[in-house]
Image (cartoon, rainbow, N blue to C red):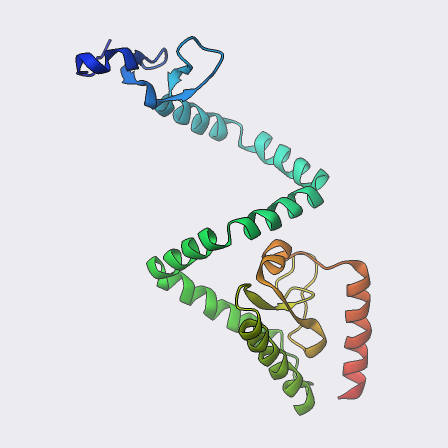
Length: 210
């Protein structure tokens, strides 16, 4: 058995892991109130190793289980994510800023991809009035951000440009200003059927108007 060199005063705060056999401080074990010493029998490192091996060996099973859970609890998950973002706004904003600073090349690549998608989603039949309406939506975004700076705002495409089942267009009636948290929760999912119908009617009207 491999033993760590522990000071005498720390001996009472250590034990051997039943998996790797090493003697480690109790802080290296997850807590478990059912155990006499209040900690699990195997250390955190062995636990992580076991979980990684299990995920690798049961990848398909785990993926299927997650997909089924997500499908059955879609509204519950959406609500949880929205509440989490609201409760941890500062923490997430700081984390996002740090990521952007550490990964400028990824951010630039993402922006370039977004611009290309937007160009491809902008139909050639848009007239000058349509383009002014689009510009106005981004002005509204600036106004919302200035008047309500405590909340982040996004210009959202109601039907996503990169939707999984349908791809929307970069046109006036497919744009709206909404809280960033709502947009992030929505992600690339399609909107409610009523909004899809309104979008299609406006699309036909816009084509006829051009």
